[in-house]
Image (cartoon, rainbow, N blue to C red; front, side, top):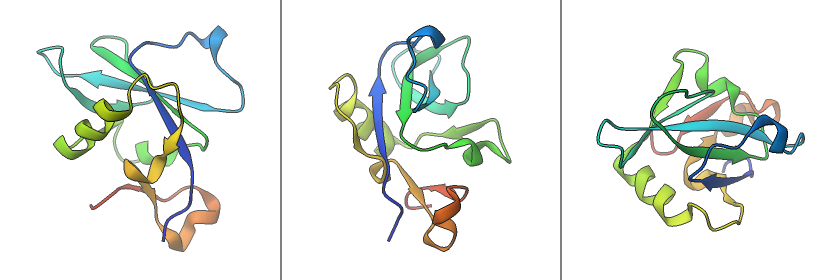
Length: 112
């Protein structure tokens, strides 16, 4: 069982002045072909593919690396939900380990 949270995926960069202060924003980097989302990062300057908006802080994902790789399965989920304007279950893409879920600091990639 995982902690419930929601995410929205947009294909655009969201300016800081347009961000909701109660949400958390992360950038998605594309590959060199400009087609596929390949990593989730706190901030992407070059090769920006889109933005992941979360109802919870996901900063713990970046404690050991500055990015999280996106698998082909996760790419499919991103394509399915991009620009729908709706928040979806974040556990489809990212999971919170149940043993420390109250702290929101033990996110893992689902299935890893």
